[in-house]
Length: 125
Image (cartoon, rainbow, N blue to C red):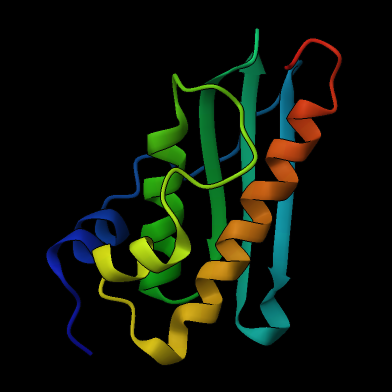
């Protein structure tokens, strides 16, 4: 399979891959390794803002690249329910084949779980 430049760049060098721990860190995961796609986001949120974001993922290069981009884009922005871009737009940006678009819904579900956890904290708006 041929990947576009965005997918190759974020897959080959996912700067936001990893784990965060400590106070004010919230996690959300979706999918399963057994079914081929699993994503977990870690958000360090304070004063309603994403201070740092990391991800762990098991899946295809598109899944990893999109997860890396989502984590990178979130830093410095308000914690909110929703990805920085719509799933359809991410599919186009990363040239995700139609048969793999469901994997982006797993990325979205993991993000929503992490954002919901952060927003459930009384200090997050």
